[in-house]
Amino acid sequence: MGEKIHEIFTTMTKEKLQFYVPEPPGRPGHETDFSYLRLQPAGAARKPPINVTGYDTRDLATGLIRVLDDDSQAQGPWAEELSEDLLVKGLTAMIRTRIFDARMQIAQRQKKTSFYMQSLGEEAISVAQALALRDGDMHFPSYRQQGLLIARDYPLVEMMCQIFSNDKDPLKGRQLPVLYSVPEMGFFTLSGNLATQFPQAVGFAMASAIKGDSRIAAAWIGDGATAESDYQNALTFAHVYRAPVILNVINNQWAISTFQGVAGGEGITLAARGIGSGLASLRVDGNDFLAVHAVSSWAARRARANHGATLIEWVSYRAGPHSTSDDPSKYRPADDWARFPLGDPIVRLKDYMIKRGIWSEEKHHDAQKAVEKEVVAAQKAAEQHGTLASGRTTSAATMFEDVYKELPPHLRQQRQEMGV
Image (tube, rainbow, N blue to C red; front, top):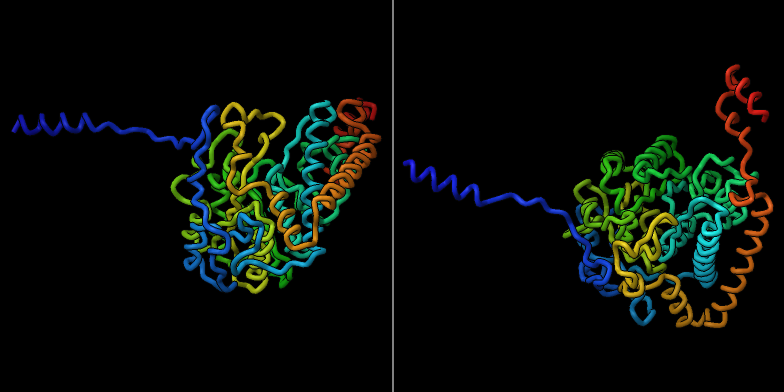
C-alpha cells in the first residue's frame, strides 16, 4: 500500500502546471504569420434577414464578410449598388482623414500639441458607417473615429483648435487632444477609458426606445477593451432589452503593445463572443468600404425595426503607432501593414471606383492635392489662435467656468488671486 501511495505522489509531482500567455504571430525581425486571420473569399458570406436571432449568426461571427475581391470587383449578397456621389464622398473623406492625421502627427513632432493618435489604415470603418447612419443617431466613439466627424463635414479648424488647446478650443482645454465632444453632430463626448463607451451607448439606445424616439446609437471600442467588464455588462443589457444599438469592435490586432490574443482573440473571433450573450454577431473586413457600409446599413435597419443590437468585429490593422508616445518597432515587424492581407482601404476603394469608370488615377491625384491645400489652410487658420509651442493656450480662467451655476466664495477668491 505504501509503495502505491509513493507511486501516485511521484506521478503527481511530475505533472506541473504551466502558466500560458498568448504570443503574437510575429515579432521584430520575424515576419508575421497572418494565417490566424482565417480569411474567407469575397462574396462567400450569406446575408441573413434583419430579424435573425443571435444564435443563427454563428457562421457570420466566425467567418468574414467581404465584398471587394482581389480584382477590385464587388461580389456576393452584401454587394450594394452605391451611388457615384456616395462613393466619391466616402473616398474623399477617407483621404481627408488620412491627410489630416499626417499633418497633426507632424504638428505634434513640432511641439504644437502634446499628443496625437492616428486612424491610419482604419479610415473605411468610421467613414462608411457615418455615411450609412442618419443625422441624429449618436456615436460613442473611441479615439480613432475622427472619420465620423470628417465624413459629416465638421470643420477641420474646430478639430485642430481642440488639438492645439488654444483660445478657440471648443472644449476650453479640458480634454486631451483628439478627445473631441460634438454631440450636435452625433459625436458623444469621448472617453479615454474606452470600454465605458459601450454601456453609455446601450443606455442611450434604451432611453431612445423608452421615449419612442427614432434615433439609434453606435458604440466604438478596440480589441483590447473587450477584456474590460464594461464590455460584458453592455452586451447583457443590449441583449435583454433589445437595445437599438450597433456595438463596433475594431480589431486592429494591437492594444498599444499587447496583441489581440491577450484580450481573448486567440483561437476564437471576438465576434463569436457575442453569440454567448445572445446578440447577432458579425465579423467583417474593416478595410473594405463596401462591406462596412453594407453591414452598417443592415445593422441600422435591424435596430430601427426593433430587432435588437448587433455586435460587429471589424478586422483591420493599426498601420501606425498607437499614439505619438508609442514605438511599434519595439514589439512588431516594421513591415506588418505592408504585408497585411486585407490591404489599404483607400487603395481598395479607389481601384474599385476606377473599375466602375467613375474615378481615375488623375482624379485621385487631384483630390489628394485639393485636400492637402484644404488641410494646410485649416491648420494656418487654427494656429492663428495659438498652439502649445506659441504659448497661446486656453486661458486659466476657464477652469472656474461651467462647473457651478454660481461660483462659490473660495473659488472667487482663488480666481482673484490668480488675476484672471
